[in-house]
Length: 184
Length: 205
Image 1: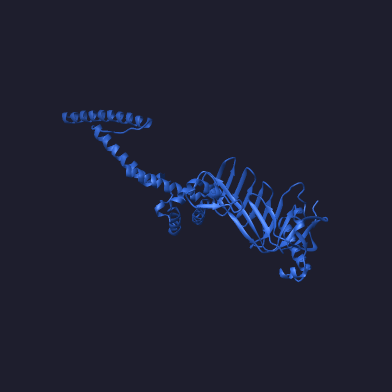
Image 2 (image 1 turned 45 degrees about the vertical axis):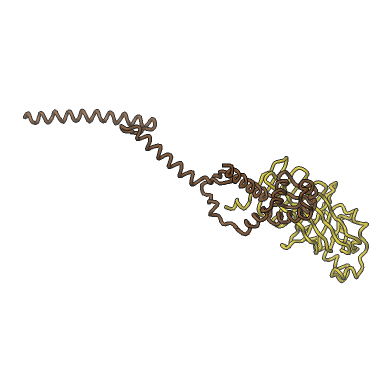
């Protein structure tokens, strides 16, 4: 065997030894991965963490935009698959009727009284003494026509309906929202 | 034991406006000059068939923490209907009908009224799944059956504290503490200050 060949053989043995060492390192790495999360963060840990945090922040922001609607009524969570309220078809003439019914302070006062339970017209009259009987009666007709109030025909009591409660809460929350903005 | 309901051959008329039932949630009235015939079982008066103008008011409304659900039913009565149960208080308000009274309501004679009334009673008994009538026993309730557009009957059962109303797309059952309402939009069960509301329109999606 010539000296050149011997030298070549020695280099090969060294390379094989080096490869064996690298194989051992790789095997150790696999073991660590199998036990849990293994992330190769390289040399610059600060850069890696900053990049990762930015990615997480963008992901959360995107998800929030898709699933939470923040408005004057507070925060509303939109479930996956549920269409956005803005995209739902709404009978705007009905909405206008409801808004029109809400558009009087006396009618809002009537709804406020009914929030605590059904009332006969004379009970409402006593509590809302600044409104005359005939005006009170016509306000109740408007509220009933809009579906915000229902009257028991046998007993005569007036009750606030499920849409009536929702409409009253919406009106008061908008008022609160505006008050806060004015304060700011 | 089941017995056959038989319409009597004496045709009567109301001498004044009669309140057939009045409870916290229901009212049935029939006007003066309305015609009536007794319904008998084993010779015992069990009710009347009426034909005349009247009205029915019914509050099928449930108050919940979320707001009231349901509505008041207000119906004008024009067609023949039947009433079973305690009718003793009605007898002083009824007297024999004249031929003019019968003609006014569209009947040639008493037999025509009796025949039509018997057909209705038989239809009602058949719809109720009974071959005859078992009586109300010790119950004080009153039962009304109003023919509806679908060729069947809207049924109202009332007593002082309880009410059952079954009509097309509406079922309402209540006693002093509990109420169940099923209409085209909701199923509501309410009692002990708590309510469970199911929006049936949402269940379709």
